[in-house]
Image 1: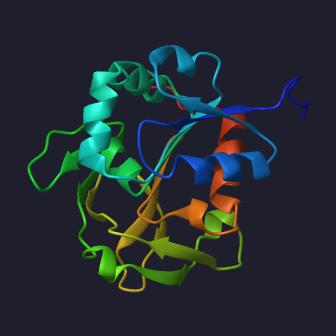
Image 2: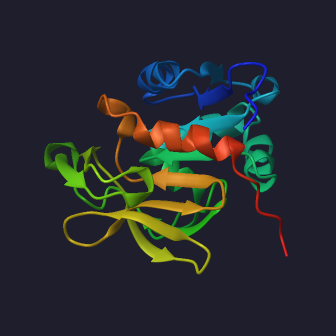
Length: 203
């Protein structure tokens, strides 16, 4: 396989949330992180990360900076996108607790903060065959729960109770947990690998 003539550029939505941690993870996998605050920051990106944070605040900031339609178009056009925790909520096509979807780029429904409040945060070792045989240590902080999954969505991992916590549809990937908060970079590498994978074309 031929190598790209430049390092891959992976954007991180930088309006709120765990931006610094994702920037560090992207650097660790040999890509170039780009903080995205305005539509012009999306130009020439190979992929985009929507970090964890407070989804209502992120929704408001996305609209304030005119990012909703450009990010939605990027995902719809086949660019790889990773959403973690609140990022999963932004990508979901349905939100159980009443809010309208933001990007609707992933055919799932979610319920926010379904695992409980900050004090109910927990960690678990997950089986994620898509990234290898070794378990992935996952950190859950006010995590959403996936309550419905469309036919085209692949479940990559489940929590100890069997609920989906990592899903993928084409090149759109989302986790209910925070892969940026550990030193295991396999989820970010999966995003990087998807840049090279052929994009699925609509029927």
